[in-house]
Length: 169
Image (cartoon, rainbow, N blue to C red):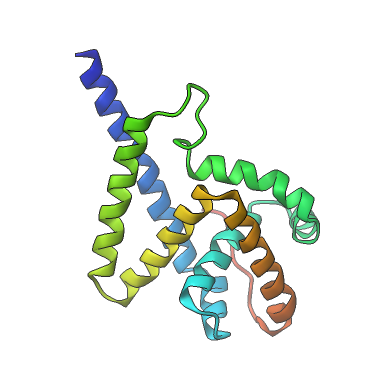
C-alpha cells in the first residue's frame, strides 16, 4: 500500500509539473515578445527558445535583467536555478528516481506526439515543449539559447515596438 501511495504521489507530482509547463507555454505563446519575434521573421523553433528565456529573465527586476543580459557568468549562475525549477526530477536531493523520470518522459512523449498530430497552434506548443526538454537535458543548450537571445535582443530590440508586457498574474 505504501508503494501505491508513493506511485500515486509521483504521478500527481509529474502531472502537476507538466501542468505548470503547459501554463508557462501558454503564457509564452500569448506574449508580445513571441509575436514580435515571429513578425521579425524568427523561425518558430528559435522564437520559442527566445521567448522561454525572455519570460524567465523578466522575472528579475529591470536592473538585474540588464546585468544578466550583459554578463554571461551571472547568467550561468541563474541558469542552474532555472533548470532546477523546470525539471525537479533531474536534480533531486534524494537522488535520481528512475521510475518517476521514466513516467515523466513517457508523458512528455505523449504530449509531443499529440501536438504533432494537430493544428498549427499545437505546433507552437510542440516547439515550446521541445525547447523546455532541451533546456532541462543539457546545460550547454541553455547557454546556446542565451547566445541566441543576446544576438536577437541586441540586434532587433530597437525594431520591437510595445514590449510593455505585464507579468502580474
